[in-house]
Image (cartoon, rainbow, N blue to C red; front, side, top):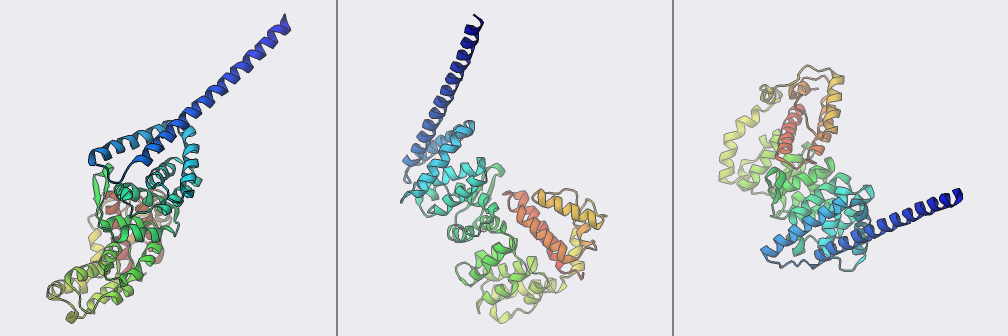
Length: 377
């Protein structure tokens, strides 16, 4: 009787395990089928859909992401497989590439990030269906700049550098004009992003856009290239952008370049503006720039080690810091080359945060960097 009970119990446990595994298998198959159905709906979306249809499609795409997220463990393998299959197609469905890559980057691991990058590089950014989802394309491209993959730079050139499209960031109620959108993309590459842009100053169709970006991510290494790119006869729009870059990010080299401007090469409006601001250009030095920070609050008396620790923490926090007074950096005995190098690294991390707050942080950081460039030590 005892042996019978033991065998019966073992049989019951085995049957329970079999039922459990069968149930799990059935659930996984159900998730896979629904995931495939969502992808089929993506493939059915047409570029010439009406606004009403696009709204319905967007609602269904949101529902798909909610489903993927709720069943992530089961959905991710399906999405990985389907994205790999799509990439092997001769004519992949563009929206599947964009949407699945976006989800894999947000919810996946480092291997998924690599797959998302391959998908992005395979996307035809000029396709109408992609242009209809331009904000999402920006988000994916911006997210992937964190990989530092240099293949992204030519893709950004093709897709964003010459476009007039804006980008809306709903969580911050922020609309990025084309130059700001590019600044967030190239800015994440740090010095490499600036170096990549300099040859494009020679393109008359791009020079104003590049100067607008250099206002945010530039340095004195661009001064010579900017000066060489100026045409024999400058109009006011171009001159104003050159002047802004030189005085904001050009350091003493930028100031000296503007003091040596040939007025004969300026149009009447530019000449009038130059004559008005020339005294301010001449007056720009360390003491004058240093005064701009007198109204700031926060910690000013920090040791060299404390400043190094604070800069390291700012880098880890993507540039966020509400305690450090910029004067602590300006008055530090640490060498300016070290401080500028650290602030440039931090600035590149600030561009990971697509917000107006990040733009304010970049502006302040640029002001500190430019002031340090005028310092003697």
